[in-house]
Length: 117
Ligand code: SF4
Ligand code: SF4
Image (cartoon, rainbow, N blue to C red; front, side, top):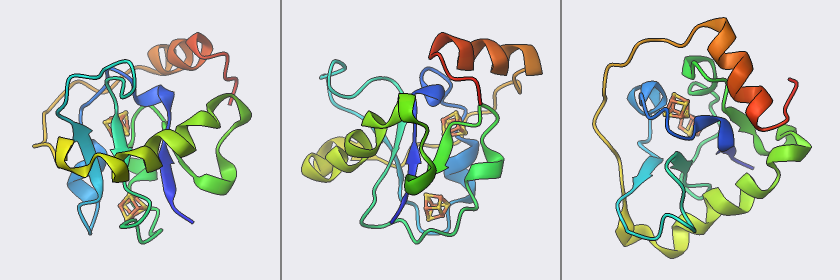
């Protein structure tokens, strides 16, 4: 069991989640294969201790426990796990302060992925 970062994170990268993770298991991709690893963050399922601390910190509501990942984001479970095959191309990124999204922006982002939650 582990927590999963979904498509709702894409292009956010404000890294609020990274700052609170007690085991530094939230990573950014540093490689060039953006087809395989889109611009979002990834949780290493082998290192995640299932504390859930990151979830409420995410302004885009992009993080779910693996058993709770909505159907439209199911592929995110395997995608997060895939980082373990390319660990040398992932690193824990530094925090970047970004403006918090508005409720409207959060709703728009969910609608973009056909997610109504
Ligand atoms: S806080 Fe949420 S949206 Fe922002 S980088 Fe972390 S997982 Fe992605
Ligand atoms: S659930 Fe806890 S250990 Fe896992 S990624 Fe979130 S903060 Fe880190």
